[in-house]
Image (cartoon, rainbow, N blue to C red; front, side, top):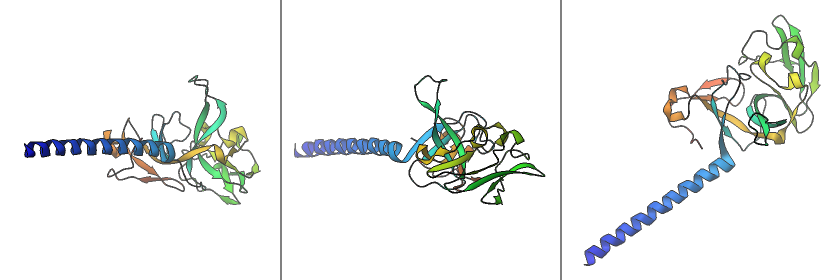
Length: 213
């Protein structure tokens, strides 16, 4: 009888432990999704070849942002396509931060972008003709608390070169740290790539990856 009671007690303890673990996992997932990470689908070709139409990106929310970061940010453009009452979100690369002087100058390879007098190498840009003459904004000093942004697919991107505007830093949702094709990383881990913090791409090894929320 005592042995039977002990077995029942062990089963009860095991059940309670499993419930606690499950609750902890749910809470952890909620906290990660709310405060640290969010996944966002990519639509359009404005960031090729860094990001492609149909990609999904993992966005890290906290932290300061720097030149070269690929970020997701909210615009003041209504999202009429989805009819959800929200504004559209863009994924672009930070080219200028407060106080930076951004210039577009004509060179042998077309109009190129200069930041504080230095021409950007733009190794991640999709084409040799980096910026079309129609999109060249001349020069602009990035205002306080704002940033200047461009798509990597320069001639096929709605960005600061076409709108002639910068965006508030506070509109940034987060920095893109991973991109992958398909519904989940586990479905085809070989497609996963890590976005370097500053400029360009870096291969991502398909072994332990960040959690997807």
